[in-house]
Image 1: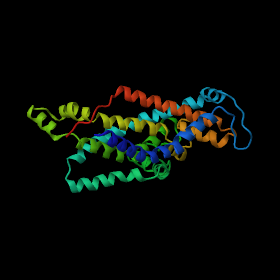
Image 2 (image 1 turned 60 degrees about the vertical axis):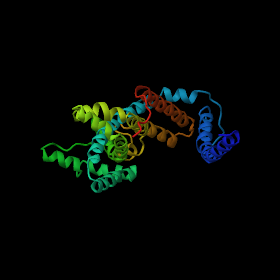
Image 3 (image 1 turned 180 degrees about the vertical axis):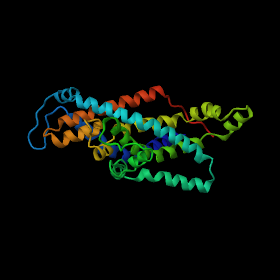
Image 4 (image 1 turned 90 degrees about the vertical axis):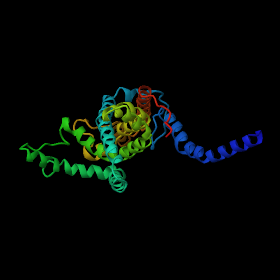
Length: 295
């Protein structure tokens, strides 16, 4: 490649990247930098702001409810993500073995919950967990159990809002898992069959190691999305009972809605950003990604 062609290729690449860079700068970089600036001010829509330094961060970090909301978000993610990934992995293996026509129908059907709004899903599951006429208590009644106030009891409220989160995320996770499974060369399994490897041995030594990148992606996006969950806890429980379902985003929303000064909310948002980044870094450290295997 000549020097002239090299420069031309670079110019073409930079030209194609320019719109993306511009959009990221306008809608991500500039708002993020401005949010950092606002977090150091006693900022308000209605009056002049004044510089307060780290006071907003100190107020958030010393607020027990913020710490509790982060813990609630982490517990919520630990309920949702592992269950979703395990179910999606098992389901993807079942779909892989189906015929092409029926598998197409199944893949389309399982994806439907993904396109449903979190608000709609919340309303559906509020009716399911209703104390007087909900499906959950109807099933309990079949086994002679007393009805349960699923969304109003401390022990059951968070698992109750975790159920629709699993339902909403299951379809997309299953399709991503299926794509990862289909990317594994069949020759690996054929060689394992010749060596007499069983189903669990092939899953342990072939499928799971070669699905590491897919699992890593789903873990990072799953934990980030579920710790940041907002709609389910807002609609189904409004953070109750006793703030047991108040996630970090709901905490931020409540402060932004009720406080005159919004610097506190901005500081909480930036601290949540640090928490999510730290958790993602830990996951990347534990599960090192590998290069894709050529089929």
